[in-house]
Image 1 (cartoon, rainbow, N blue to C red):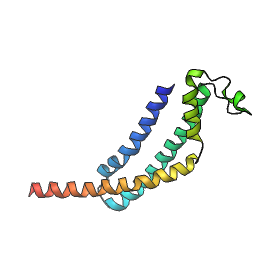
Image 2 (tube, helix red, strand yellow; image 1 turned 135 degrees about the vertical axis):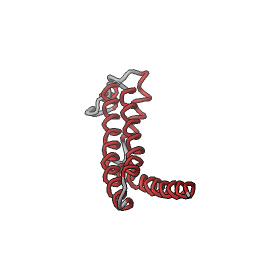
Image 3 (cartoon, rainbow, N blue to C red; image 1 turned 180 degrees about the vertical axis):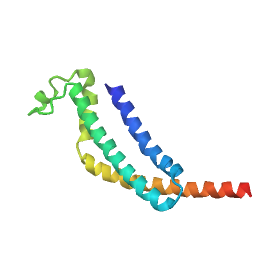
Length: 135
């Protein structure tokens, strides 16, 4: 179960990193405006899916390890958790406490905006290098 969740998480992260590059390669006219709008929209959707999936996968793993999310005290919460998995469960429990996944999505979106800008600048630089080498 853990491996399937990790694979899905890495695929979503790969999509977040690759989609702006694919959009940049496909666009021909009004490249700045179209790239900005398309990449921001798709990036927002992918980041929301990614952060939601991280939260849901943690809940799935907790349930898989026997964690009782509806327990009233520590004995009820951890009664079905094997002692081998206790440290993993406590780490996952700590990671889901704190800020919620929508707020993580907002922070993730703000973090990836410079990535989009760097990709666009890199595209401009590569185009200019190609034009200089042709002439």
